[in-house]
Image 1 (tube, rainbow, N blue to C red):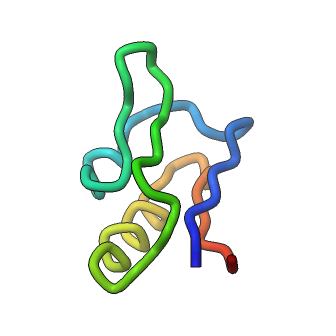
Image 2 (image 1 turned 120 degrees about the vertical axis):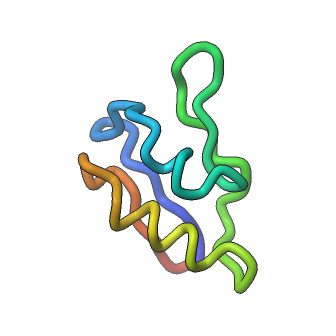
Length: 64
């Protein structure tokens, strides 16, 4: 499974970074950086929480 970001919906509010800082980061330019696109047992709970918490619904977990 992998993390999918809809860049058109993302407003870079940073909720994902606050929820899953090992996976998401807002860089100095105000761009969302996904540190790893893979969802595994080690980050699954945090990624799912970030997807649920995203106010613009820009994140999802997809196959692949």
